[in-house]
Amino acid sequence: TDGYPVHVLGYHAAGDGGSPLLRWSSASTASPSRLSVVQPTGHSGAGRWLDTQTYDRVDVRMFGAGSGAGPDDDAINAASAYAVAQGYGTIVFPQAARGYYAIEGGIPLCGQMRYTGVGGVNNALRAVGSNNPLFLASSGASIANVEIDHLSFDGQGVGIAGYGTEYFAASHIHHCNF
Image 1 (cartoon, rainbow, N blue to C red):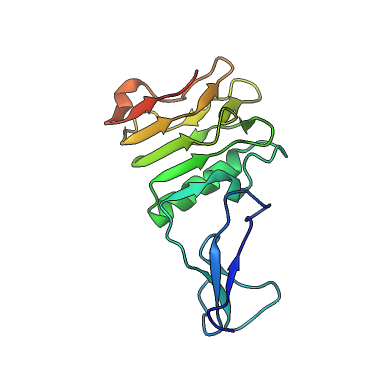
Image 2: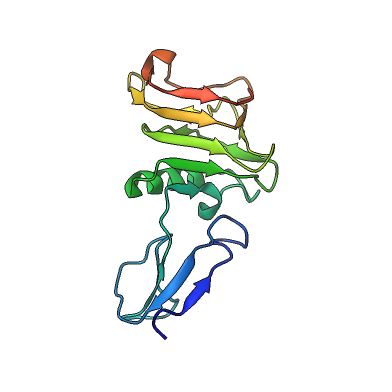
């Protein structure tokens, strides 16, 4: 029935931050999207579940980060790319299942973006592997309006590759542990 509501408990797993309220539209042929349009498996033609909410943030768990299954770089980078493409201004790092997000190859920072931890002390980013930085950028690239807050960093002696403080314009890091 058109307009029938369904509350989803998660994207990958219950409680992962992907919990939209969806409504059925039998006429919709919109392209599937991670957050806003769901096409039922095996269903072709018209008919989609459409998200009724408006977002301004992306939860990295919706992309598989923090599950403890392996490094979280790809999932975090996918969340970041999605946030940029949708014009969202915040990437959220809630408590990770294993107590930290494993960063193996680095996370490219995006300008005009807030990276924030929520939900307690288990929102740490930890470099894993050998000599891998937590954050990446092309040397000489300027990043403006980056805000990093309420995160803990365990760089294992490695920091932000390619960045000196001169490359951050109007950016802030606060309420973080290093």
